[in-house]
Length: 354
Image (cartoon, rainbow, N blue to C red):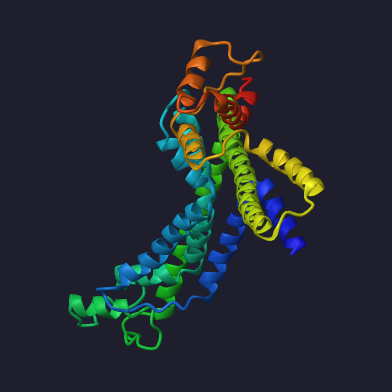
């Protein structure tokens, strides 16, 4: 279990490597899925094209959507897009960068599926066997077949065991021709996506390097901020639950002591008080469910501006921010609430030196 825990922590701390690994696994899975897939062309004019193109396109769309589902940044992108502006504006370039980054990773598995499918040629043969020119592969005039009968015969080319037109055209020659065309399209597709990827990675930074670095930095910042806020809330919830459970057992224990008679509890009482003090320090003054709900709501609706202030609150905006978010507290709780809110947002203010 320790090894799995260490591996999970490593993947969490190296999310980019983790997502690249997921994309690689999906690419291998798409190739393996096609290898184990049993292709059965219906060999009917009404369904050949739909089946052949469907096998080429539908799994690729499924792999693309699966890439979005497995990417943890999708929820972060949606949250950043839909959040209220508050004191922090939303930069469309950051959202666009995050979306493009997610899309690029999600396109790997579909590209592998389409490439493997075109290289194999079965779906292409099923979809386009009815478009063959009979004169190139056999007798175009002596077959005495109507147009409909000829199309039905051509639709049976992918099905070796039911093809009955050997006296009209050579099935082997027609199959080779269509598969050769499919492989040509496959290589063209690989060449196209390779050139596109090269253009994006090699040429774009040459023209927009400063904007690219800024966008990349702040997209990473949004990811790190969310992780740190989740970790802070998890630590607070842990301390909150621990104190709540301790207070429950202490109340039960006090009732039992009063019922059976008080015993010697001076030393243990001092130790418990010390423990309570250390745990309560972690709560930072948030002792009620309503207060915690208010903190979380304020974080969502009005995130603080990305502006560091060395000497604490030095602007009217900061003072108004604190007054707005601490108005519901009593005087004794105001300082604690203020400390928690700014503890949760300290990473915001620390990283905004650009």
